Image (cartoon, one colour):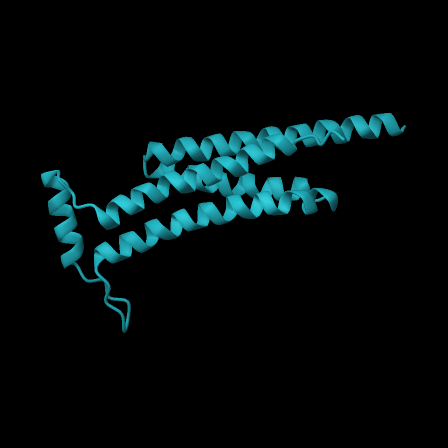
Length: 152
């Protein structure tokens, strides 16, 4: 049975996984490899020296940046995996359009954040995901429109 939009939805979910894996490589580098560029060394030293006041907690700037980086990677991996696991049951329940719209919203927010911060690498991944999910929704709508026309 042909399932309109499923392949494009999977492409978006897999791109989120790829995005998360590549981002995780940057996290790994930050956690386990010492910077070699003099400017990076100074920035690393400043982050390690700076204490962030979070009430009873006082992590360094370095810890704060790295927890946010690692959390971003985990979020991307989680959403990609969840999409792949949910695809079948959600489609069977007739709710794929809703899940696709949620993913378009999610990837649009990621894209806008990257655009605002002028950070191209993740912006490219977010844009690719947006396109895959947008094509998926277009295919779903076309199939639904054709189905309604055939039913009349």
